[in-house]
Image 1 (tube, helix red, strand yellow):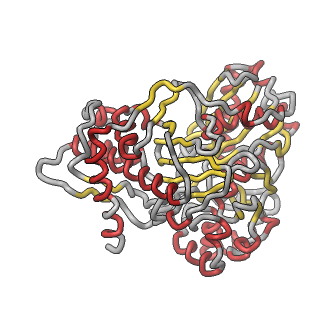
Image 2: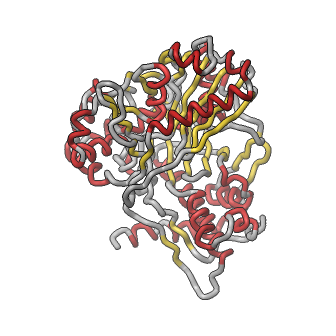
Image 3: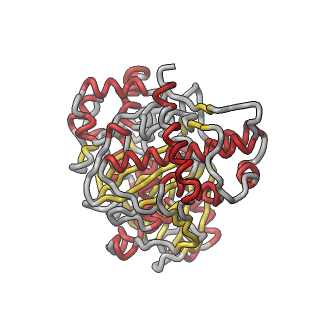
Length: 483
């Protein structure tokens, strides 16, 4: 048996699979985000640990014999979070999360201190990344900075609690901004630019490697007598890629969740920092991936649902399933800033083209279009980095709207494959990595693709109208940036 643990922003999820990758049991435990100031986003790491134990307790209750047979554990997690520990391994302050915007000024400090930063990391520094957060701590919480002996990402803090090891994987570490992504090693130049040292970093592993074993104390407490190995694991998007089998060059998927991601697996390192494309390591040695990231995907629809006091599924259902063309209004989905292609944490959203006749349908349609246009921005940025996307698989809560998928297929100009119902998310991918770490099985053998339930093709009749609307959309950000 193999266990995958996924540490998201809103919950910890556990998936238990057998040797044939059949899902045996699933459990989850909720998490809360603290926002002590505008633009801040934090969590108490102890909350993750309590939720982890709650998930294990649920799984033991459901399948005690299966839990007792666990031989490998994989970890998946929200990226970029700064978990600061002192020399005794004690947490010094709440973890600053991926969607925290406070350290935007520190991004420029990094570029000033190390002009080759984007060349080394393959990425533009963003407020969400870990390194700028540590510069912010140095400026505003100097006593905590001086006590910081180790900086761990969220899932790696849980690994530390599980095994006692300070370890991380290449994919998650690439999102810290301290990694030389091409060399798959910490960059001394970037560490120096942020007043950090190598001894404050965890040891690096590939995602499918074993980093250690579950401690004897926890093996007994969790009912896992085999002392399972713990895999390096990966950032949530890499773990999702492992879960859906996006491991070969050109394999692509879009994640239509709270945030949106366009993910492409690469055989070579292919950065495009100028357009805020994330060029990170994949979970396997010699593999990389690119990501375009939208900070507010289904979050945009949920925002509108709250505003109109109408559930999001009801809003999308009212539009029907036929696609006649784009909305009369255009929506810029930058509700909490944006990553790809602008890398701007301070910009905010906009709706243009409002009139007396604008109703909830027009607004809803505009939101669906706007998120699709944001995915198109990512596609164009990936093309500029030399990547050719021929089709994408779609995962996430937003895929329940077939109209939204039809809009996305039309705007991107590629088929969108929808997998059959089942768990192909980060926790399942983490369980696969636990399996590979425990057995030594190859990713080519383990990371098969799910069956496809439906393929949504671009609507050729609406294509020209959407192309014209997209050309208007891309003019909005430059026009409002300075306002």
